[in-house]
Every structure is written in structure tokens, then in C-alpha cells.
Image (cartoon, rainbow, N blue to C red; front, top):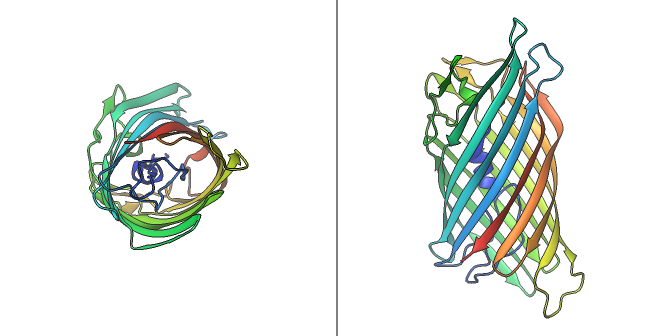
Length: 303
């Protein structure tokens, strides 16, 4: 069964303003950016998501659908240090056929696991019309989501729970190169999942890259209220096998590569955005669910 990796998703939702300014700028839609939040400024980002995964054709004919939202608040503690808090709300529904041939639906909804992390700019170079920054980050996923939810059939499988019940550290580094016409971002991240309820999700390694290119206006000038960017991103995720009572689950663990086209409309204070994640490579183990697609849309406000 597929588990929704909210800590990884939380990282992908964070974008910030140029240091010292309270203006919005284009940024990745599925991961972090190295552009800092101005000192004393806040960034709020809300993304709504829909994820579909399945294992058709199979005797169980399982389909997992996830609806939800992820709220992110960032604060510029200094010109180099930014602090972030992330809180997801999820509605998960799993449809499957039992060995007896009956169709079954299992579902849950509510607040998921929150995340807190800090990002610090260790290198920056500013030139006319362009800049380059490198910023490592370090954080902790907290067990705020329900990890013992039940329905009429008993306790829900651990991957279907809203939370993992574990305290999971994560970290990585992100780099951003920005010009007046386009921006390139790349990120490496790792999350060490720990055990709770006799269950341990496999550790996760992720590499992400993004290009945001200004589509309109083609020529910069005075009086333009906003800018339209085309976005293309790629996400490579490797997760080790889950462990149940110390034993590897043969139906878990994977290596996946996604290609994600999207759009962003950027104004001085706010951004509207939407993106579709499409799997191009899925190396799965056993009877693990495959990703069909996911859609995200939302907004960002600097204040």
C-alpha cells in the first residue's frame, strides 16, 4: 500500500521572497528554494492536492485516493535564517476487493503529521540581474496525526493512517540560480524514519530539480501587474522497504521518477500556482501500489 510522505511533500511546498524585500518571486512548486525570507517577514503558502494510486489489474483491484491541503508558514529570523512550520490535512480513501469478492472501502480524514525546520543560507553571490544561493536545511517531523485510527473492519493499515506515530529527522541542501528571465532550483534531501507501533517506514532519499521560465510578458517594462511563468520539474524519490516488527515488508520500497509541468502567476505580494505530477519510472516491490498522477494547486502570500 502506498504511504503519503507528508514530510517530503512539506519540503516541496516552501518558497520565499528575496532577502530584505516583501515581494513574491517564482519558485519551485514541488520542493524548496534557496531564496531567503526577508528579515522579520512572513510567507504563507497553501496548496490543495489530489493523489491517485492503484494496482489495476490485480485480484484486489485497489485504488487509493487522497484529498487534502498543506499549510506552510515561514518566518525570516535573520537575513540568512528562515524558520518554517508545516501542517497537512488529509482525507484518505482505499477501495479494494476482498478475497471473497466483496468491494470494501476504508477511509480516514483529519490533521496529519506536522513538520518544523530551519534553513540557513551559507553562500550567496549577487550580480546585476542574477543571483546564486546555497542553503542547507534541517528539521523534524512530529507525530501530530492520528496513528491508531479504526473503522468497522478494525485498525487501519499503518500506511493508511493519518500519522506515523514516530519522530523523524530530515535534512538536505537546496541551491537556486535566478535571473530576470528564468530560475533554476535543485535540492537533495534525506529523511530517517523511526519506529512506532511496531512499524517503521523506509528511509527516504530525494533529488529534485525545477526550471521556471517567464512566458509573459516577453519584454520587461513598467506597468505590468504580474508575470506568468511556465514550470517544469523532476522528482526522483527512493524509499527503502518498510519494516514490520523488524522484518522487511516485501510489498514496500520503491524508486520513482516524476515529471511535473505547471504554471505560476506572480504579482508583487502573491502567487497563484498549479502543477501535475506524472510518473515516468516506477520500480516497485511486490504488490506495492503504483502512482497514477497527482495534482496540486494553491497560492502564496508574502507579508
